[in-house]
Amino acid sequence: MRILHLTDTHLYGDPSARHYDRIDPTAALRGVLARLEGLRDIDVVIHTGDASEDGTAASYRLLHEILDPFAASLGAPLAMVMGNHDVSRVYSEEVDPGQHLAARQDRVVPLDGGGRVVVLDSSVPGAGYGHLESAQLQWLRDVLAEPAAGGTVLAIHHPPLRGATTLLRGLDLDGLDDLAAVLEGTDARIVLSGHYHHAMDGAIAGIPVHVAPGITNVVDPVTAAASERALALSGVSVIELGQGAPRVFSSVFPNLGDTAGDAELPVYRFSPEQVAQIVEAAGR
Image (tube, rainbow, N blue to C red; front, side):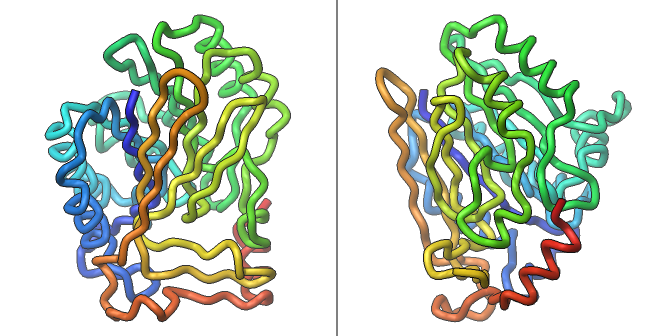
């Protein structure tokens, strides 16, 4: 199984809006997809959340106007995950008009060859951190009780890993022990996440976890210390699942939505005091 892993597009319903008053997220996404023109043999495209910045129906229409034909050109289904900037009810209404408006977007996406993507919605309305309700964990337990012939990929926006920076640790996923207990001994091959905006790898319950770099910007986790900064870059990952450990490849490019045109200038730089304010407002 070959997976194209995209994340954190942060699209607006208003195409003139800019992320941090600088990044055109639509141009950033189109720029990444243009660089992937020669990509082949992809079995599924997974977007692990924060598809939208403003949670509007227009932003989700724009997302699917761009990603649906792209995934179709690869002959691959598109699996969407909800992130903390997304609004699950709005997305549900947009993709399934007239249907029951689900508070959360948890579902199973079957794949050719007997594999599947299990999507978990870890978003908490009005918050930046992630949480899974006990009913979601029970649903996941029931799904995984019946193994898939081709194995399972779990997709969740908030990584089940300890964040690399002070800010990301304040906006992490809670209940990791409970999730690990559900995943242990199952057919889950890998967990794919976004949220951190930088590439990262780890494990939960012995299952590999991969975080793809963001499309709207890429966070610098190495030099952050107690501060936080993001660069005018865009990233993407490809995951290959076969015998043995997953093979993961990530690429990072200049952000083609950067209206400042200066890759050396951070998209944002938060001081320790600003980080503390964000965590107090959006953290647990």
